[in-house]
Length: 639
Image (cartoon, rainbow, N blue to C red; front, side, top):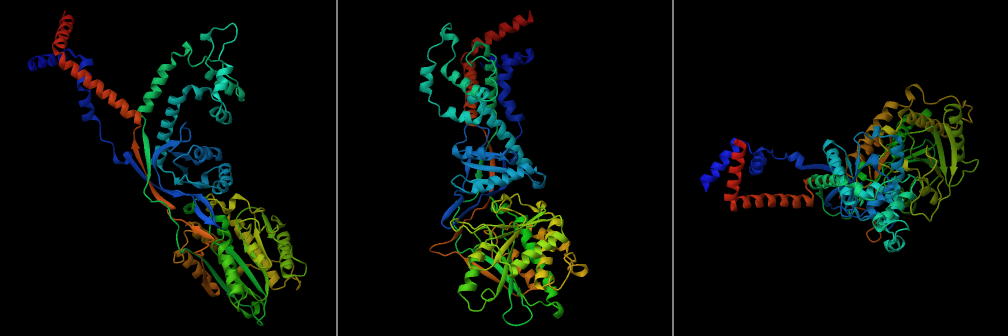
């Protein structure tokens, strides 16, 4: 038998019998020639940043889950249940995000571009509007953000191709004749029984075989309701679509052999962070004169906020406010150094923490200074409180007040000085006062000055934004490139000029309104503002990430201590029994994407192996018949 098999094999090679030789040698050739898959292609590791998770006033916000182990799909796939949905920022929309949540997706990963400054402005504005809506509700679906790289983009493109092919294989006809998403959603919930009754009988003049199925009529009905005209095509069951079977076979083959990815996070389930401290820093310049001097308080919160804490750099909100505050400390410390320019006003500077969480740092600071101590500048003669917020863009400045200042008060004088300086020295600036009463029914205050107004301290907020609901105040898109250095320098100078004219009463002394105070050695240092902005935006400043012993607070305290006196931190800890705020961990994780094949690939591979083994078994069992057949073929070829 072996001699006969060797003779047959020798004859096969001599006669170049390709079909049989191909079948016999294919597995060995594949095993020997196919290179092993590189480790970099088999798995990819990248950093993901989880959406916000916190409790404020007992109300939960953000995502409640932090564990992921599921297969990846793009939003184009038909089935998203228990899948990790990948979306690029350029393709992201709130409707698609809601669709993933409605279908109980296993997770959502939003891929951000590497260069955020290159993103079109309309995309940035759209995402800024979506961010508050994403955080307004609680979701159990873990939501992550990742910065794109070449490997991650390759994963996305392969997943998109697999998702598209699987959608075509499962519903090729429906995809071809579908209408708009809204009508498609209606179709999913359509009562098919009424449709069967309506189209059960064909119209007169048509035979049963010529009348399309009720389901096909339903698809045509959905399509005709859209704005796009319905093309004249045959139903999928029509004989004219015989050529489509080959296309469907190709789609099924592509579906079986397409690459998939299993997305797995390395972290554990998130848990509440106990005993987290929100730290604020205060410092002062004491006025020259008696003990009962009026005090001007200048406040800006340093923390940033966005849909993902680790991506919240807060350039305009509120890095610009802190930059202006630090520059004002430098200017007035020089003025207060000399007796001739030492004013009769106490200046109290406060860099508050927790500003994005209902101004928790300011609230506790006021309670400690007004309720739990006998000696405080806030208990004496507070002239007004100036809060600085979002000052790095635009040609507008708005003074937000809860109660319009009365004429004859110092806050009214400051308002008039702002108007005068803007009109005579910066005519391009559109200045206005915005009056908004405090709405105590809302869980979150609109502006920081409302914390002071509740305690009956005259206060206002200066910002280039007209509304507190503007998405620019809480967005991960608020990066360094969104702050214009020239605008920030101009606004700093405008505020410094107005404050100086109030403190030194320059208008009453006859100083012309178009005469600047800060010139030559006392001018605003644009380079200083730029360096402070670069430092602030080089690190995420979400309240959950700024620890009391971190480098950020130590650097801030050192900077204030260089110009101010009695600089000290002020810590806030949530109450254990009824916490006003609760933060959670696992905000930054490592995600692994493992290359896998779909389940149908295992089935296809099993069928191929079974067919090969069956052919080999048949050849061995009927070798005599195979031998005679090959001999006849060889003799016929020789003749």
